[in-house]
Length: 503
Image (tube, rainbow, N blue to C red; front, side, top):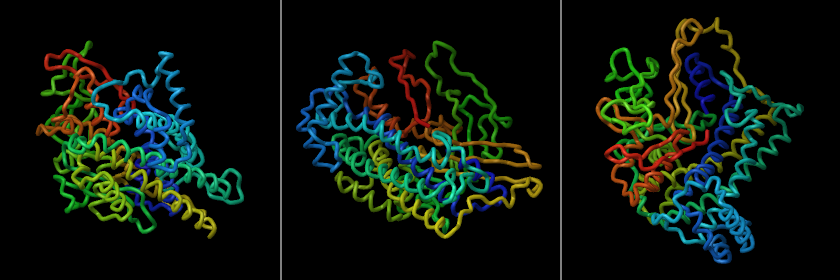
């Protein structure tokens, strides 16, 4: 959702306040993106780290139906339904054309689910494919397309509100959006969360693995009419949930000490994004890509730091900050999930906690979508159709020089855009994206980023099938469509894994 961060950056620079209708529309577009993206991540990018597809072939459909009915009242839970899924999966496997299941480590001893739980999860994997395609139609209605909605403007939104126009947002479109939001929430409440709670108890040891930094950063998101954020901004240091530090974006700076870039002042310096540079300086290995020398430069990512500290961003950071801030919607759900699993808040600082936090915030956001839509409908009923503030649309009215910061809590975490405007033109523009925070290399002080820190101490049963590494890395939901290599100490490549992230 770079669009909203971009327009917020310019609005911050120019002192533009958007109308409430624009605020609501932005919340609706981002909110359904959270719900769809997190469900996709769980089922299609992360669940198969815990679910053995081939194990589902041994499942008893009757027992699977009993399991499904014991955790949810989702209608697709009959023995006949699960038998049909099992038959389809069996034919799929026997054909030898496994498609998205081709590269799994099926049969790995790290899989612990019983066959019936595997079959239930695979069935919901397939259902989620159709579900997500349907609910994201909201983006076509409010944003013109998905991904990358097109209706954001500096000062508000370009989508129009008009009950008498077929092309604008009218009563019929509000009704359709409401129907899609209900469908989204039903799947989250009756499928996603029950599945998450059903799978987690089999992997409780992962509540003590995969944390790493213990420092968390959130910019905050989903403002209401008073400016209060559903997910507040803040900093948590050293796992201390009793102290929520205020966020100051001027304390953010990026290093390139171990990145394939250069700074004019030298590569041990750090720069705030307003002063940032992006000058490529590739010094890495050439094909066949020998072992990376991590004492030097080894990444195309910079190393962002907050007050010179490495930070984790994403769903876990947002949930922890909201929990520490006492947000009732978040705290109640976190406490309920922890009680269900029989663990304390310390379990959140882990791979399993990261996965649970993503589900928790999905449930929170899914629960707010209809209330935001009702707020928009009420304003339209009161004849308030304003979606854009054009008071400072003319560059001739702008100051000679202006700087702005645009934030957005994207599904993957804190996204920041920094813009420096001189004489009505962009003099410098820098972005710090969530995966840059989490996947960053070490900085000038040798501090690792979140991924590197989280992997330290992870037990790996089979280096040629490192499913344990995938579990932790996937729990961050990395945004990188590139090859990840596992090598031994002598530089011998053991395996190559594709990590494909949704936008």
